[in-house]
Length: 378
Image (tube, rainbow, N blue to C red):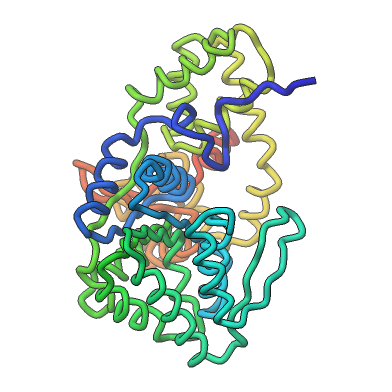
């Protein structure tokens, strides 16, 4: 039996039809690429930056004079793994059935690689270095020189770029900056979700990448764009959804991309022909309830003061005056030092995000479902 495609994917990129808005962000990224500008793309986790990168790459694929490669650095632990995943991504993106793919393969063979295949996907993988740091830098530099020697523009997206700060090779930032700044054919997009760390990397005069990129902040999709997108995809599949239900979904998820998609994905999967407000609510609370074990684990791993602060922020949703007497009362923490220590830990664990709006700086939970769960439990 043919399966019905769910138009609300929660992972991966499935083409422009299933990608909502981001028109301004796409135009700006493409403009930066055309005009020789490297970009640092910063957002909260699960806001859709990886999807945006693939969406932009899909548009650039129409230009034969531009090649794109996406690299996820999240699981890399050192420069050797950085080099290997760069080579692997090139090989997987441009297989030897294409002209440039054959050039990539021929070049990589000169580096005496070990080829293997991922047992899950069957895609080729490459190992190029033996762990020697000097050899690793030399091999990585060779790949960059190969890319720079091509007679077309190459766009390299390094996702979760902040991971390089965890490498044992403490010179990685300086090494990359030294060589990247001289490249004319390669455009880099440095993206990531550790906002504080990435701001430090690109905006502190003490760091190698200072003032080397244009910074883009990826926020939520405006409800005015998201609402008709949701309505269209339900209607196109002979489903009806009340506008009040969509409004509630967007509010419940705080317009955070992944959490909106998760709710719509579940509602679509349930195959209801008519979705009203009550159905949307029950479905959302069911999703939140499924995460209870994870949220209980948070409570176990946090100190009492950290849990109190997390709970208080979740119940308030947005906290502008975190050292105010009113918030002290809500959090049951009674000194600024208690707040400061707990807040620092929650930010480091990415459970809390720091944002700015027209009212100033505020704090909120990174996970809207956790926020609703805390409110739900009272």
